[in-house]
Image 1 (spheres, rainbow, N blue to C red):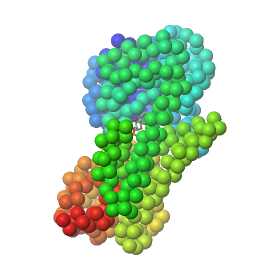
Image 2 (cartoon, helix red, strand yellow; image 1 turned 45 degrees about the horizontal axis):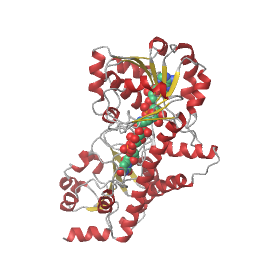
Image 3 (spheres, rainbow, N blue to C red; image 1 turned 180 degrees about the vertical axis):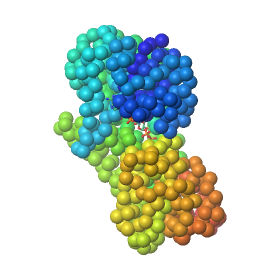
Image 4 (tube, protein in one colour; image 1 turned 45 degrees about the vertical axis):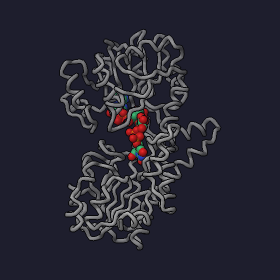
Length: 436
Ligand SMILES: NC(=O)C1=CN([C@@H]2O[C@H](COP(=O)(O)OP(=O)(O)OC[C@H]3O[C@@H](n4cnc5c(N)ncnc54)[C@H](O)[C@@H]3O)[C@@H](O)[C@H]2O)C=CC1
Ligand SMILES: O=C(O)[C@H]1O[C@H](OP(=O)(O)OP(=O)(O)OC[C@H]2O[C@@H](n3ccc(=O)[nH]c3=O)[C@H](O)[C@@H]2O)[C@H](O)[C@@H](O)[C@@H]1O
């Protein structure tokens, strides 16, 4: 058993703390958001993550997992301290490390001699060296240990990672961290800190690139009369390609992919290395979000002014209540700029869940659909596929449904007399399928 402090109890920190407690360690999670800490102390978890509340409650009840807003209460006892602090984008796209560096004086004062500081936050290559220099504690080892979990699958991904990446100044420093993870079956990639930091950005930018490629192919399919689902199957059987992150959608979003692509571009700029490919990926994603609005106008054969559009889904993906950088937001903004009347429904989003500007929310899918001209499916929430489309269609003013996720069952929509356009499936092909 190791005594661990986790600084930052957000998606990564709370999951890390709960999973480390699950592995048998004694963990204290620290967060400066005192309201959050008070709620966590009473077992109230505001992140929508499968299995996380149960895991937190279980280890809280044994005392293995505790929460505090005062880091000084636990830092000096910790054998290992994890940094899981936010690294948001600055206006120029570069990663803002202010929160991390603001902690360093306290870490310098409080960390126990011989302890390890582990950076799980996503930080630009080179940050490890800066942290080590500013910390100025030769008796504390700093390790880069990027996290690869996906929201909505956080606990599963943390406990079953594809790999554990450790960036250390010397291999001898990895032993304690590897033993911390004992019980987890995954290859360990040990490298220098700068490479470890770059692996994280390389992974996220590659995922963004793959999705961009899928969306580009989806657009081409609509022009050629081809079908993206079949193409994805045809590509996915080639193990060199694989079919993960090749589902077309409204454009990749969320709190990480957009910020990390921009941050890596900034890293390249600072190193006089123009990463043109990443610039194109960002441009293509923005094009794709606008294209969805163009597509609705084309399918309606008229401008959107005074058209009522119902957005089904605001979160950047299902099983989370996170709307940060969700593609639904720029799409809603573009619709409103074209004078459409927009209303949204998302099973996980209420006005109290997000402070971000968002379209007006309906309390149920049925309420959102009433009187609408167009339905735009943006998040693949299971309940959308299970809606009683036949009944709901009667309450709609129009008959167009644009499914950006290929999530609805076409037969349900056809039976309801609705006109379904699935992204990446040509109108010609859909007509043929309907006739058959
Ligand atoms: N969200 C995700 O799926 C993943 C995020 N990451 C990376 O992990 C890092 C953390 O991301 P999230 O957990 O999503 O952030 P988050 O925003 O969900 O959580 C950050 C937490 O840190 C707290 N905090 C802020 N300043 C603090 C301070 N000085 N002391 C203690 N707590 C403080 C905040 O109150 C918040 O609860 C970022 O670098 C992110 O890029 C990496 C992999 C997955
Ligand atoms: O650094 C991070 O924060 C995390 O970023 C992503 O995880 P996440 O953002 O939670 O979600 P993804 O499942 O990767 O989806 C990202 C976006 O791409 C979209 N997407 C994903 C897959 C796909 O095939 N098509 C597609 O449009 C999703 O809808 C979502 O908007 C990575 O998958 C994680 O490995 C990484 O740890």
